Image (cartoon, rainbow, N blue to C red; front, side, top):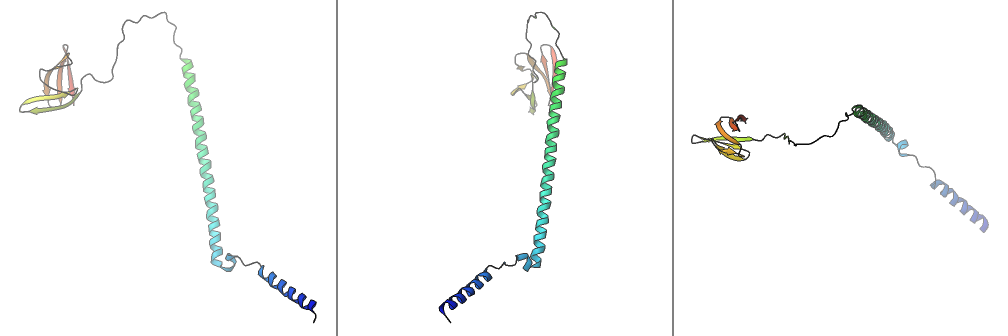
Length: 161
């Protein structure tokens, strides 16, 4: 045999082994039937989660859409009601006195106690007894269980707990 023939035989053997190395390997789920079932189940779960996410997105966009149009309709009715109310034109007005109206009571009763037959009350964070003066305008007339009566410039006021 000549050297050329030997070299050709060697290269053909090398080529045969190289083609065997690159043969496609079987996929894991082909070798394992249980793996194929798990992969199918995983794919189904992913698809159901994708559908659920899409549904949530559609619902949230619908709620946002409804809120947007509700706000627009509220603003529309509000501005139309403001336009409908027109104030009458009046002549010059003179201001003589401004009266301040307070929503808080002038006298606030926060506690009542009886020590050794002597009744005392806490009004506007002051401890008072019968006959004491409050704010220079009111006098404590009586202190009873759960109520205090004051004389405010001739008018009687009843404070309760």
